[in-house]
Image (cartoon, rainbow, N blue to C red; front, side, top):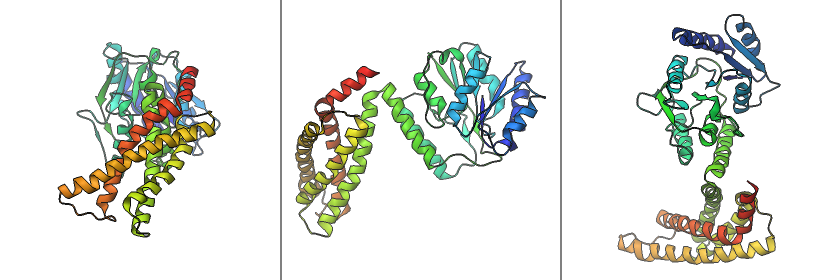
Length: 367
């Protein structure tokens, strides 16, 4: 399966290399190209290549996304052993026979071409792209034990996805299959991930946001409580920025005592958090006039815990460590960060089992 969009400069070489690698091992191969109406003529070239290779071409109406293209490719393919790879020559086609053999021998039902196992590597990536990749891998760590869950190069038995509802967002269909698929064993083989030879990368800010949304949905499927806390924590992180900003302004500009500043910061941030948690985290349909007081009561308890932790750190721990109290210093902000983190856990548990408990039960029943 090769999803394409504006990959004309790479397509001929890729298909030729796939055919050569498989023919050398005596393997028959059907190559399914799913093109999203590429304006550069990728689809037309794929049609021409049907005269030279065993290629099946699916033409779609527009740029509908890599993951849905792969799913349509699965449906169009005739074989029971499926391989997915990118069209930009970043994945080595010469590894396909090894991946296929792993499945044929019964060693695994899913095989991933991995950059992050021993022997795998990435060529010519700038530091920012390496950091983004590692960060995205870290986000998915709670979903699978695969070291390279971001890989777009993988093979699987058709039975792995038979009867499985796939609903990926963005471009990481492999991760979706690793989480929802029916298999007992997955193996990773090392690959050298090469930078694309021609064309332009499709990655951008919107793709990264879709990936985060995709991961959250997969956590909801695989670990619903962890997914819910991730949402709660993300909203809490935004609230924390608001909290810290109000705290700093109150202390630095208006010379308020740090405890009173903390109270104001907490109230402002807490109102923001309730609105977003009700709408997104818990998808609540409950009565606002009931839930908001409950949320505030939990928050008051959290506020008291926040103040106790903050006071203990500032007035007891910092002097013990020889740190002079400076209400506008970075140490005060660090102390507040620690307090916010601990209180967020308390708030999440309390709101889950009290404020939004009916919504959680209803959402669970509907799955």
